[in-house]
Image (cartoon, rainbow, N blue to C red):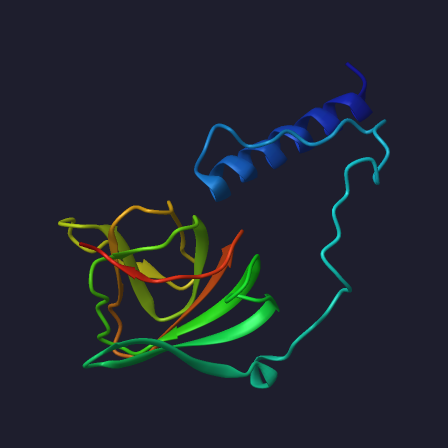
Length: 166
């Protein structure tokens, strides 16, 4: 095996391993072959943007407990009408009532220590840099476990909703 082939194989294995670690799944998609045109199946969602943290505008979500309200800050898309990436600011000590969402979503903890667990499970602390995936229509509880407010970033393929569980 030539040095170039060994380097490529090592890089491919590292990328696949990183994909498994990040997604937590053995179903990570392998990179496209080097011969495939880069634009064959590219999807572009709009122009490239960079938004400094102090320029993100937060608004009340209407989801409240005695600890306060969840606030949402748009990164892209529109959480009320479709595919979106949104920052969620959750007050420290916040524990949501049991609820569901129609659509699946993906979340990353940016600040604080959060938890997102199925009903009846002990909260699993998720410090900054942690990730979770929430299946749509699955009852769960989301919390901010830290002494400071939490900031999450969520990506969802459809509109955000908050449906109290029955």
